[in-house]
Amino acid sequence: MLFRAILVSIFSLLAGAAAAETKVALLIANANYTSVAALKNPPNDIAVMRETLEAAGFDVSTLENGTRAKMSAALASFEEKVADADIGLVYYSGHGVEVNGENFLIPVDAALRSDRDVKYEAIVLSDVIGALSKARSFKLVLLDACRDNPFLRTMKHGLTKGGPARGLARVDSSESNMLIGYATAPGDVATDGDGATSPYAQALARHIASPGLEIEAAMRAVAKDVFQATGGRQRPFKTGSLFDTVMLSPSKTTSVPEEDVCRDAAIHWAETSKSAERSLFEDHLKNFPNCAFASLARMRLASLTPDQRTGHATIVIPSAPIHGSEDDAPQTDCDLFASASDDKMKVASVDGVAFPDIATGQALEACQAAVDQYPRTARLWYQLGRSLHKAGEYAKASEAYIVAWNYGSAAAMNGLGQLLALLAREGKTEEFLPVLIWFQEHITKDRASSATELGGVFEEKAQLGRAVAMYTLAAKFDEPNALYKLSWFSDRGAFGASDPKLAATYMIRSLKSGLLTGFQSDIWYGTPRITEEGQWSFQFRVALQEEMISAGVYSGKVDGRLGSSTVKAVEKLRKKP
Image (cartoon, rainbow, N blue to C red; front, side, top):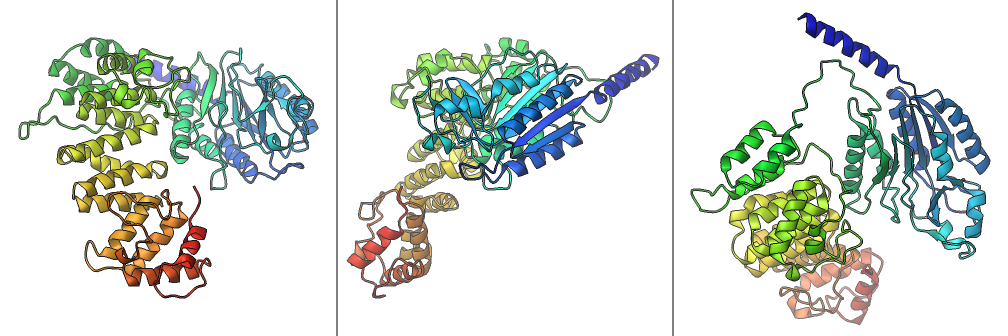
């Protein structure tokens, strides 16, 4: 008891020391540019960041709509504060530009008539990094500055070596215990989002100062939130090196720290993974249920567990990991044998392998070894899923795709949709029903076409209930071909009485959403062209003309005839891809 009391006292002192850390932050929001259109979110971004950081004990300085002179003065003043601080943080929201490998933050008074002007009118990122150099424990730079840059469209190019580029470049600082966070990947463009704050600022405010959350874990949580919120279009990343455990807001409760329960998980898994003994995998899950290799253990155990009633392998739906993803794994043989050319997470130095060309023997061995070594890397799980899919190991493939999605792979949803379509054609949907349910629950707008394609396979196999369920799911995201299908089904009364008005509503939504097939082109799986007048009910044709009058694209007679004036009206309405 005396020993425990001493430990509690010691950790109370340590907690008091942590609470006494000096933390300073500089937040800059540039929105009202004099030479280009204003940005809507930066002032809101620093407002939410200020609230978050002040709650975590930071001394926060802010600058809104900084000219070059004001930004320079703010950095100079902040550098003095940092000299007496343990932790220093700079957050910038506004326009930025990369020229010849160097990143610049653009003040509101910059004109940037040519690329040569950038170094004279903007603030070089290295100056920001320099302002943080004297922080004793940890330095953090957060750049919400990768927005689509209007200066690039107006400035003269070619006046300096290595002209300005889209997005920001990756920068690796020589400073120790420093991280640089970027709102999206190098060369990509971040979005302002639909809300009052950017997706990156929202995620930072949610995670970065969570009590007791280590900063690198917080940054992984930020990246996952932004990736999912933007439908995979924006993938934050970070650079830098961190040798110490850093929490911007230490836990408010003090207790004797528990033993690291995952400390020996890797060693145990190294031996277990080579075995085919059920008991070893069960032991791993018993001893390390929430550690890095738990999902792998569940998958391998599932493959060794036949369902005694059906003889089929049990399908295990992997849960979301408690640890964030890691996307900095180096190139592996798995990348060479199984990467997909259209995967945004693919290693840039490899071309990718078409699905029919995957050499399953080499790919399976390489990808299993890769996920064993890098168990939190989304692209490697996706590539393992492709390899298993090609090899016909469908249960394992579905699980690998789900793990990949959990770690942030958008391409994995397409892979899973293609696998479910194959299973539907082979009459195995019932066996994989948990996977189908998971797919329906996790589909997103940018992957809605996968649901439409799967619906087409169900329709082909005369499983109309499932087909309509898939089309309805995709239609929630305004997927145009799914809406077209629902229009056809509603007009025909496939599941009850015909509803021409509902059919016309679906058709209008389909056209406005950008029907991918041309107006007079054949629609797949037996759905007729609109101009095949006899295939559509007279009531539908009347309702369609009435809807087009309401939309302001048709002024002809409401006669149910799909003549040239109606065709022209539909083409006006149809959103061009």
